[in-house]
Image 1 (cartoon, one colour):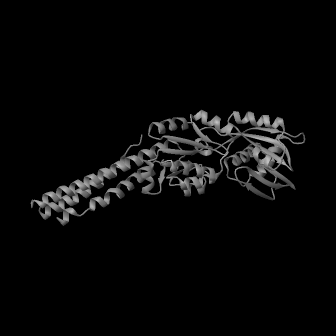
Image 2 (cartoon, helix red, strand yellow):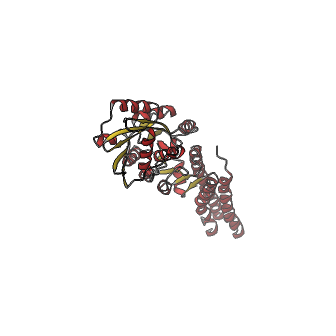
Image 3 (tube, helix red, strand yellow):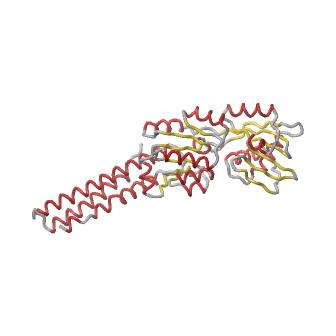
Length: 359
């Protein structure tokens, strides 16, 4: 009786399933950092997406450089913008640097720089004070944005482009426009997520509302928030959790780290993501393919199903053995066979997750 009642198979039910599922994910470029995260993946019913580098490719390109001052040429505007961004890892900064390299423009060195979170950069170069960022940054620094520049900004935003304004010593000298293409698979993945039990999809971005609305419309996203800071992303995640949702957060940047940590499961776009985002997240997608989100959810749900099967199977064998033993028909040899058979059956059932084909 003691032999058949020993719950060894029960102890194997969860760890064998989790190990097999994590191994399956690793082969597909999905790094899952723990069993609890895998189980949560199957329960998620709301997902919050960062826009830049997550729903978009994360490799924006400079599309236009407009000089807004008679003494400045477009090449100068780009050069001093690059001087402000040269040490930044933000996708927009990297796009500006790439553009100067492609045009073989020399970047003037800067003395020091200051990151203005959610707004842009303040830099000192050649004895000048540079401000590079959103119109909100220039407004906060009392820099006049001319009607012509404002018209350019509105036009670019309606085209889903991001304007960067450069001011030198308090005067607006140029506007740089950048565009980050939407990932080709994004719209289809979002549709599949909705049909797979995701009830809320929210897009967050630091961009202007017009730019955010254009991208959201292209992807069919109804809920979005623009001009958000890291703490705003955190608030959105917590608000969804308070409403009873199991929340997944998908992001790639330093600004996403607080929300990634607070979500029930944080997922980082591994190749495009910063080290901070990848370290903070519970799951990292090594190949930055949004289709892997479907795989994470599918694998998590399947792992939970197998765990339940394992518990049911092991409990059933133990219960049957106890009933047989109570009737005096169970010999020690048969009890040992049943005991080990239930453990082998659990391991065999879990091993199916290694070969499980994700849709």
